[in-house]
Length: 417
Image (cartoon, rainbow, N blue to C red; front, side, top):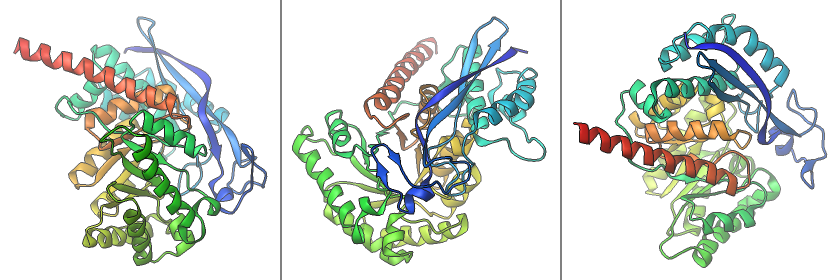
């Protein structure tokens, strides 16, 4: 077997874990912190630094290949796994996962991943562990096969070598105006996120949000280069439903009003409402999608909350309960399931957005690029962090390097053929 030892190294995620329930309940922001008491179990304060755990696979030639284990920013919200606890995750990984890693053929990616991430005590391992370990195994398979990670994914899922760039979506965090300018100057494909996660940012009847959307469109025209027309993608964290009500017709009406206020731009609205469970989310989102489609609206609904695992994604895609599914990589678990999720969306003619979280790391972002490009997702998140520049360079540069290597491989194969 190719793995002879397993290493662990504590690390930092690129942002913070936030108690979404407390923020939604009206927590007061004081500088970068929130001063109210936390609500979600596991949080000692509303905002806590994001930690990660690197897992290193020591191969027989002493090469060490790494993956990063971490949770998402809004851990414990919307049916997600609880807050990441480094000591607990480290203990479980070393006791349960490490022995399994020493026994698999790491050159066979899907087979090795299935064995290593098998049930423990009749339950799935924490999804953060699945995510980090599957990254390390994908890097290992690529190393052993002398291929890129994208080529391993293509081979395992019987996909052609990709040629198309995947559009990149940047998120602004709270520094909205400055970061929007950065995105426009760098000609980002999809922008700006906007972090519309409180009543203050959404406004009475959504007026504050609507004004921000119009400002973004005007700013693109003012400082963007000629012909630059990005997709506008706003994450409203359920606030349309919270402010306007949970009636699909009223939510669709509001979204159409926003779309009409930014003519000439394609509009994505992520998480328009939270209906409380996966099933009710599917039923109501499907109604909103149907209403928008019947009207011929250019606006698209993006699902995030209540759509976490591969099975959730399958249910939403089959029900046409979104125009675009955010495949939130740490919530899906194994990165192999992210690939499967993209393919499920494509099979159901639903858009696939390989997302994730600002709390991730450079390593997890790079792996996500390879899976996104291999499966030809509709868009992918610039991550980690909330600073725009760093995430856009990590994801964009990795994609460009990958496509250069794939083009060389394709040219070589055609020459040999």
